[in-house]
Image (cartoon, rainbow, N blue to C red):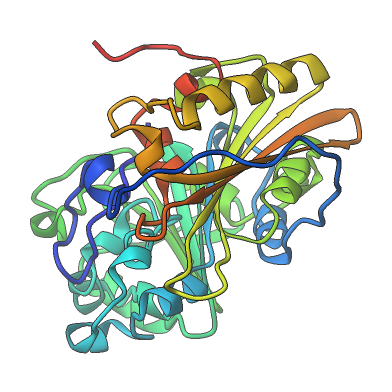
Length: 364
């Protein structure tokens, strides 16, 4: 299971927070509105581009997470470099979701930049794939100084290592965990074991294979119809997570589940979270809509959280068809002061199954 949304890297590097603390910033009464309808949406270019840059591989199909870091950074009022982080006065709502797609490494800012040259504030996008022990992430953008990263990692003891036509920077053995390593003191114990730094891209992970996968080559994840459909359903999202239900502790016939945060009209506007269920069966889609209405409606309650009425302002559902896949889109407009990432936190806590069917391993 993935990590929770983190406390801001500026305030407390590496710390996790509970879903309730992250999400509940306001309360009041609210209900649901809207009816199911038919519509077709074009997938956002940034998300589809990210899917196209990742190899269609076991780690990528196991778990995919992406963030428009540049947009989230601007929404949060964060600077464009780690060096300016101490002078920032961020919008704490959007600050909560800064760093998705980095496998938690952004939570070590600004210290990680000073020690490794990896500046997450300067990146435009972040993409993560896989689950431990085979996971990797990449950041992209012209502001990434891969030459500085290379120099810093070599100074920390990395060595050049070639495999499958790529040049890696290797620290320790693959899948090793070394709390005494060069960055162990700040909590980075194996996340940088294998890295590739070239052009506007830096990729890293605990082994060569997932790092190679996140860098792409051959058939991409964008060529898989289900993933393309999920991206289209997420529409204009600035964060996205796509995975098979079983990988996020959900028992449902859906082929894929996806959650994301819709691009807002302003940093202070109410946030709309999106949940998408991609399935070949229209009957399953209908069942999931019924379940979501019950859990997120005025009388519902999400596991580990306050009553839904204190979090959710309104619901809207849309159904569409992409190829052979029937898709349910659930738009969850949150209460005005509730932070983005409601559905992501539910997912990372293993409770998404409660919304769409049942949990594979319910909490005791």
